[in-house]
Image (cartoon, rainbow, N blue to C red; front, side, top):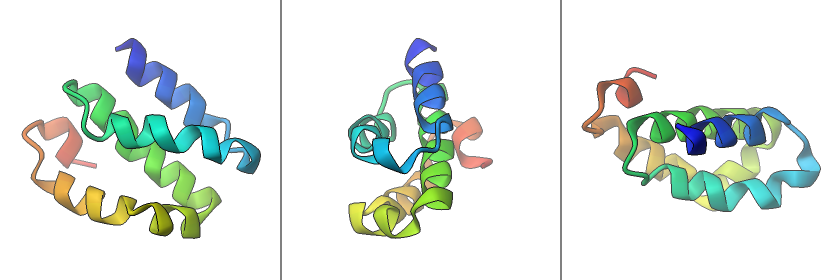
Length: 79
């Protein structure tokens, strides 16, 4: 729960200058054991995409999101 809330806070800042610090936790959240953290990661990728679409494409998040459509947790898939 704490990891998910921290990620939501970090991606909610929407500052281009902190994108380099957001990418590593965002990538780790997409493979976390908690469904809530993975859900926060998906929403975080969307927030970063709204800010800098090319960064999301360059980091390979699009392929990760496609693979998460088959996630075992329904709360992650319904986004």
